[in-house]
Length: 539
Image 1: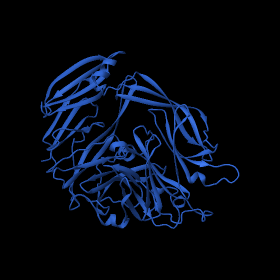
Image 2: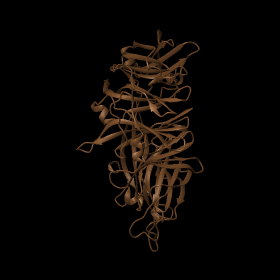
Image 3: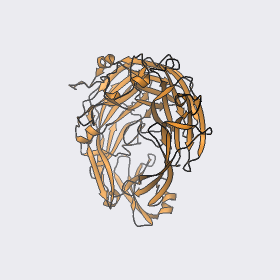
Image 4: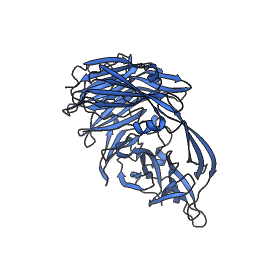
């Protein structure tokens, strides 16, 4: 079985496929939908292989009370069979189609936003979130307005020092990780870095949930990432914690004047996982092989937690070394740790030189991109048949400080964290959109479990469509696929599909059809009017 967890753009997919012989399409078909359907959104895809039916339902607004639904019916070979149309009042539509999430043109949520002042004190602001329905893409556009602010205090009257926050836009609550700022005679100046609390504050500024946790020595938080419940995909840059937990990494705080109070070992890291109701799910001590560990991301896969990122040996503490532009630093190693619910399974540190020694590309690829120990963006982690794949992309920085993404690279580790190979692709597209946006990357597992397929979503550009004042953006990306043999750690040549004329649907790039024998790419033309079905045999 393959488990996916992706931090990046647009979508997540878990499928299994078989041998990618010759990487050719057995079916390459198109169909043109109506202009009305194209001005709406694809709400649902229903597939029944027993009755040989594939149904695609599009939705758009008919009038102020009624939505129109057009369902296009195909057989499993994507031959068009019929179109079914119906108009339903909004309340009836919500009952008929559970994916129809329309709650009215506009609705408002009162919520809380969090920030800190110049000395780190927790400051709360009320905010008003206005959601405007967009019929063009089938969801709500969000607008946030900040209102008045207030400084809360704990029961002893001590102000809170804000360390991290995560706002829940569904309930209006906010989860904060704070430290106690003691005041008065005998106050501990480092209490804010030792005596922590996780708090949930509701929209009325009431603290509705509290859980305290303490450290013997001062700590600094080096990384905070939202991790999904039940392996759900979470954007690593997201702040809405409504469907996730908050994962935190603590490292000892030290430096001049702290010799008597600092942890003598700067490598004593701690992992903490906090639910969005403030409950602490896990606290695990981690001895890092290197004191300076710039964690790229934290991911949960199949009940296990993976923590990874570059590192280097230092005598100093994290608050002294993990400062400035970490992407620009030259690191000496790349660390990966695997945690179970009770502790650490293992942690490894692979020297950067070993990555370059094990770098490879396809047989006909002239230049092989490699990880150099800096300027690398993580794109997620995949665990497949006792192999761990960390996906990412190199980048450079222009004179104005903007990141320009270059070639995708991927690391293959075995089940205990030893590096087996590094793969790099010299991408086909170098458009402005490709430079400014990280590319989509997916790993697909073969039926026999002996191979995987690395799929790169090549970015041709970005299209903005407008209709009746609404707009939506579509990334024009097509699949570029290569086979990797797990045991040998070798990669074949890449093959792309769609001929750069048809592009993957950004929400549903694959159809879950005939998965044991094929993978079905699902896309459309640039203007969205023409559907594209590309079936790739995998037997």
